[in-house]
Amino acid sequence: MAKEIVNEIKLQHEMDFHENIIRFYGITTTENQSDNSKKYLLVLEYADSGTLRSYLNERFEELSWNDKLDLAFQLTNAILYLHDQEIVHRDLNSNDILVHKNTIKLSDFGLRETPIPNTPDDYVMTYTDCWNDKPENRPTINQNLQFHQI
Image: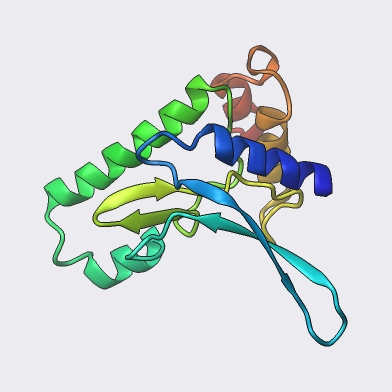
């Protein structure tokens, strides 16, 4: 797991200059007084409005459709940037997207090694097939549809 964490930190540092990706400032440690163990903490840009999930839950009705479209456009820009860098997020959800002054800030590039609990097995297989290989070796949408008999 340490290798994956180092990789996440390297990715976060490399993506540091895109306006819709949370800024990475560094790493700090804290010591647990009871057992002298250390915890390592990432120091990231502050997001004044929390996660996209909470932001939308609190403001959905008051946001105009143009505001919502702008948020979607910002998220698309962040994802396109990652894909241009040949990076796949792997765990994109509204809790991994932060909001600061009405600006989307993508965070947490998805170190998840196990599927989210209760994810259907066929979805896990599709997800694994789609993202654990080079893009040219991934199944096509038609192959996925055929697999799921849609």
